[in-house]
Amino acid sequence: MPDAKADKLWVEATDVMLLMRLVQALGFQSDGCTWQLAKQRGDRAIRGMGSKKFAEVVQELVFLGYGEVKIEKPLTYRSLKEMA
Image (cartoon, rainbow, N blue to C red; front, side, top):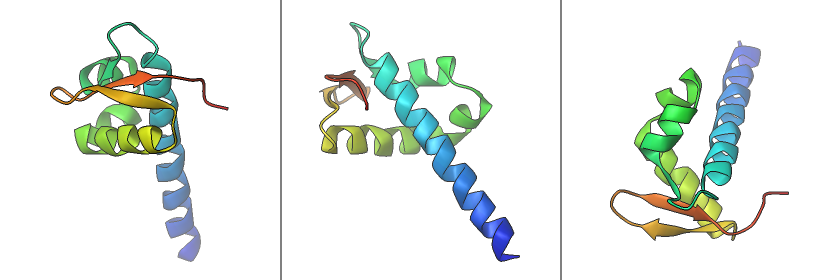
């Protein structure tokens, strides 16, 4: 049973990384990236994460220095540099 739990955590981490990369890529657009845009461009797994996970990803990207919050409502992320 521990393998199933580890597999679930791995899938969740992978999905969050995919969301992070999508938000970062869309953040280079002139209007930035909102949850609505990420939801439209993302797959089923990304759409299932919800706006709270989007906000967490934006906060992490800002903390890591990859971008900034352009507008608070609706939360809009703007990329400043490429991810390594």
